[in-house]
Amino acid sequence: MVPTYVHYGGALLRCTLYRKQVDTCYHCGRLGHRADVWPNPEDRICRGCGAQSPPEDHQCTLTCQLSGSNHQTADRTYRARYKTPYIVTRHHWERQQQILPKRTASSNDANKQDTLPPPP
Image (tube, rainbow, N blue to C red; front, side):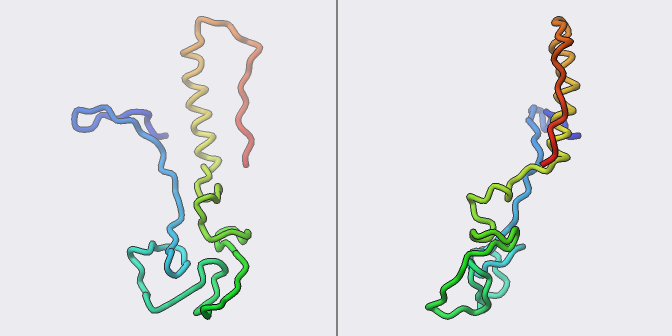
């Protein structure tokens, strides 16, 4: 579990879990690197469909390399790119369940019972 706060250099810092995102090169359209560290400048790939060395008048159908859906690979509007894994959601829920009895110790709310969120 990740602590909520840590002491670092005399300061109290809030901790959050890292939200993984996929690096996508906007020059060649490949996954795993960014445009600022482009390993093969002479290699061209269509960002929309992934076709190798497309001609200038290339007509393509958008295809995501991550999901196969009809949008550009790792498009900023693609929500699953930042989707929080279920295990992280479960850890957040477990932490809330540990904190909840401490907060509501004075109130006797026996009828309310929180349940684990369903997996995606």
